[in-house]
Length: 79
Image (tube, rainbow, N blue to C red):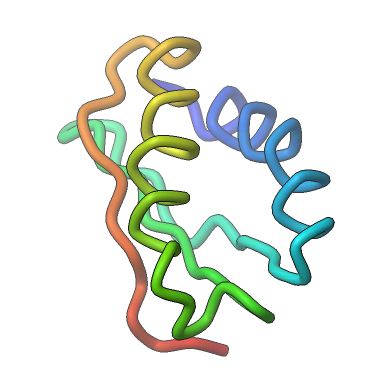
């Protein structure tokens, strides 16, 4: 799993997230485990639907497009 491939997928998702007043930031890609860590920003922080965004949006897109992806984790240190 390449960090560049993950970043490309996230960039395709950002416009929709930004339309809702939020944003996301790639924190880390663990190529061995396939785990991607992201930080949600803006309106996503504290939003009750952020778990849906994380699982149904981000995770689903990465699972489809990035070989070796296993999970997405939320970085809790909102910046």
